[in-house]
Amino acid sequence: MYAARLSREHEPAVRRLLGADPIQNLFLLGQLDPRTLERPFWYGAFNHDVLTGVVFYPGERLAVPWAPNPSAAAAVGAFLPPLHDSMMLVGPRLAVDALWSTWGRGLSPHRSYDQRLYVCDNAPSTPSDKRFRLARLDDSRVIAAYAGEMEREDLGRNPADEEPEAHHKTIRERILNGRVWVLECDGEIAFQINVGASHAGGVQVGGTYVPPKFRGTGIATHAMRLLNQELLKTHQFVTLHVNEANVPAVRTYEKSWFKRYSPFRLMTITAPPEDSQ
Image (cartoon, rainbow, N blue to C red; front, side, top):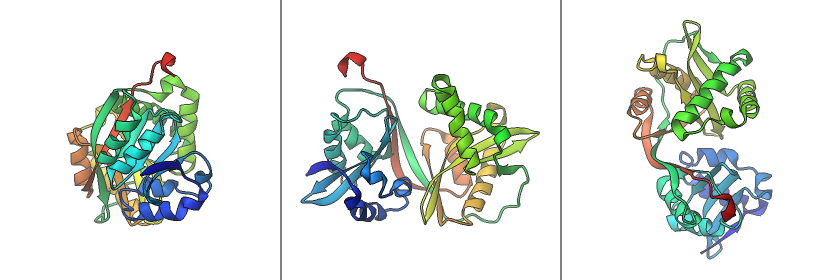
């Protein structure tokens, strides 16, 4: 088995590999584009010239593997150290663990979460609620603040602390693209969520945040049911990742018609010392 950077000519093989499980690979299929394969964004493992695993690397903060045989992820991981350092890995649990076993170079994960991929493909009819709507630009400051707090709770860092303008710009772009939904309660945003990667069959959501004063009120379950009903008008299924230890979130999603699908891992990595580069 050997690893290599992928190019445009590999697109059919990548699409076949990912298409074997479009639910687990919704994010990767949403990112697959011949133009991205011309950049150093995709790496693959080959067994007798047959593609057996891939790693998508869009930048220094993220890497996403798919490898039905974890040894393929390990082969790519062994190929990457001279090229990239990663700060976050997300994907099927065995593939992430195998990727990090060869890419880690002795670093310890800062955080490692057992996650579960959930999928919803049916949403019973729910009465509409005018409080549930797409976010507007005049919501952007509040949504940016809540998005930062969500990352602080989940990942231990708030991007607004490091690059506040870049963080706010990202939020504004999501809103302009119709990718943020909110539910208001007494004139305040009581729930927000991002609509992320999508392809012909499905769409992925994430970045769920409920301000502390509204937690435990049933707001999140109500909003998720409304969101699923909305998204399933145009998609066959909706997916999300949730930390299995976050019992309130798990209960919310299961009450919102999501079903358990497959084990995932989210791992954040401590940055290597500068003198080790």
